[in-house]
Amino acid sequence: MIKTLTTHGNSAALVIDKAILELLGISMSTPLKITTDGKSLIVSPLPNDQREKKFKTALGKVNALHGDTFRKLSK
Image (cartoon, rainbow, N blue to C red; front, side, top):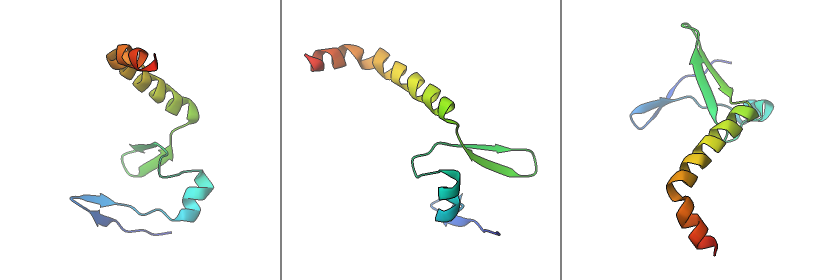
């Protein structure tokens, strides 16, 4: 399959067919890891353990900043 980039604001976007997204289990909310080997662009979904780690890190930051407020709201 050959694709071309499309303009998206001041950026370039690559449109991925729905069938490929479904095959790979990717949805619009799936975090994607973008890497390169110097010649190719590699786009892959983050494994669930990396997603969970990223979520827990973000949750820890939110709790550190707003934990007292959340506790007060829960009463």
